[in-house]
Image (spheres, rainbow, N blue to C red):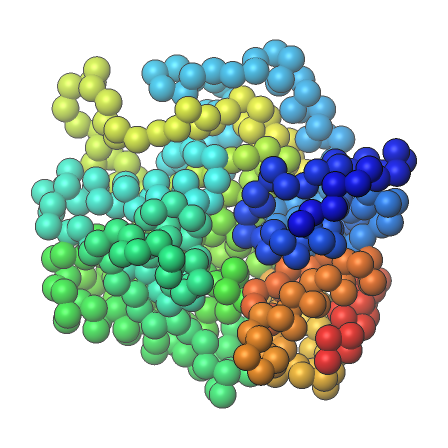
Length: 448
């Protein structure tokens, strides 16, 4: 039973927490011991009781330029007062076209067209639908099968959940979409443990696509979708050479390759997109999160010319792709995104992430000998620390670590099961890297 007794008037917290069913949250545990936030600035959140919490998670992988950026707030306010909403079907706004051009300019050559949506989940489903529609338009309507990867995460739409490979996200939703299969994940702790950056072992795992080609026939497969770094499952960097091999295999069989860069996009791995870091050109690339610095919902899909142009046939008055969202390219989101891209460019935050990558890796690897640490992985400005699970209570040590970080150590982290994940804003300093890692050490000892 929730405590509904009045709280002190000085604490800006609702008296009743029952009505809000929170996403991806242990609701009963949260409401017994809430982690409530009231403000944010630069590298810190402010709690309702006035504590400063250093943000080791960039909110949720999205606040790459830190919090409370006046440039973004001013752009949102100005746009809201000027144009609160414009229908994206059959009408346009200048900011959407400017933003699409700037995103395409950041992307690898060949990814020249942008389809806007509102989240990473919508971006994944949009890319999958475009893949199916492209093959239909291109006279290969038999290509209807979609391939994901074990331990992959592509949001929570029916398409993204179906191609996703995190068991806990799938098992209560029945069969989901038909015609979906999965290649093996890329993680082998025995051969990759405590790797800095991309592990040496595992490029050959891309050949698992051949197994599914042999099973289903290449002419039935529309697309393969993977994250260059599997983030939500606990930071699994692609092995060296893996993504290039995956591109070779898919290209050989006429299968579209989609990179889900919702997490890796906008500087997380030291480049605008991970595709640039790995020198691989996918057929489509999804983005979200960092495009607006988390200040407004937005996502999208970058598409190669060959795919886009295949739809540009027939009478010009006819809709070429029957897909879209009420809030696609929303004016406020476009304003936030344009201001965000200005900050990334002016402050050279992508280059900063690349420069700080070895500093974070060295600092986090210093946790190797802390209690119950069984692996550490680092790539870009991202790191994960695997803790051994408590007997019969998988995920409990990680959950306790989340609480210890917030309530006892003034630190925000993410957890994936018993993995502690660090994904700080790209504005982090070397001193703040040390501060966060010192706090993580205290968390690990607290849950030993």
